[in-house]
Amino acid sequence: MSIRPLTAAAVSTALTLVLAAPATAATTTLADSYGMTTDRLVATSAAFLGLAAVIVGCWAVSRAGSPARSFVAIGAGAVAAIVGAIGFATADGGPGTGNGIVGAAIAIVLGLAAVALGTRAHLRAHR
Image (cartoon, rainbow, N blue to C red; front, side):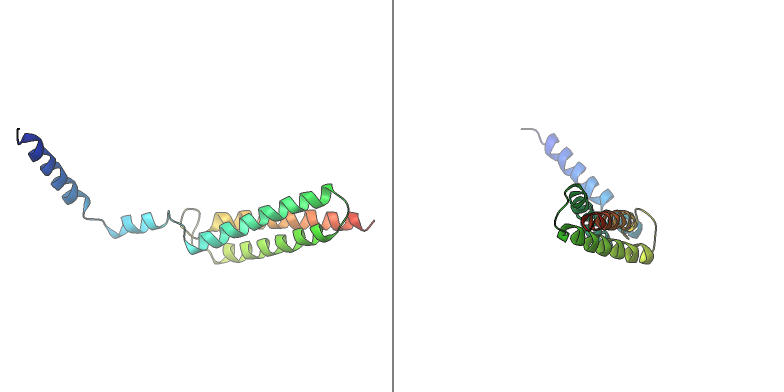
């Protein structure tokens, strides 16, 4: 058996470890912004709450009857819009910085749409 493959593997492994080892602070900071930060988690949760509220609001508009669905859509939409507005106001940077500004903007839009749908369903139920 030849020792060449073993030597080549050892040299390539050593070169990989030596060249990849020095990570700068900029690389580490950049990589951290791609993960799920707390701000992104809050904004994404608010956006999903707004989406659920829009679905309930559409359900309430399409089926007349109990006003409970309209109250759920209004309440959940208001919470999503408020949390989104707070996240949007407190974000330090723009999109891609890990501050959740995109999710907050989506939460505001979906929350306001849910409030509008819930209000429409509530007014329609009282005719």
